[in-house]
Image (cartoon, rainbow, N blue to C red):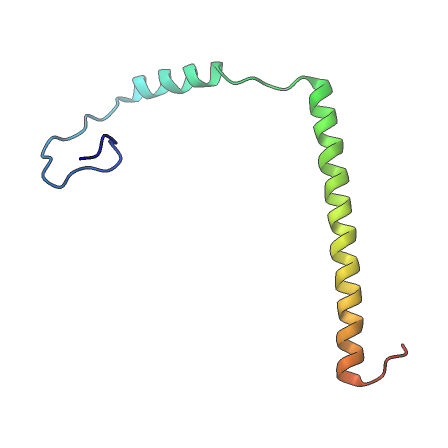
Length: 82
C-alpha cells in the first residue's frame, strides 16, 4: 500500500476534499512570503553571468554552423577551395 496521496488505491472509495478558493489564496500568499528575492547586486551579477554564457554559446553555435556548412558544401560540390 502506498503512503502517497498522489497514487490512490483503486479500492479506496474516500474522496479528497477540495480546497476552497479563500483557503487556496491564503496558502498562495503564505508561500509567496517565504520567497527570498535577490538583492540588486545579485541581480546585476546574475544578469551579466547569463549574458556572457549566452554570448559564448552563440559564438560556439555560430562557429560550428559555419564550419559544418563549409564542410558540407565542400563534400557535396567537390570544391574544397572557397
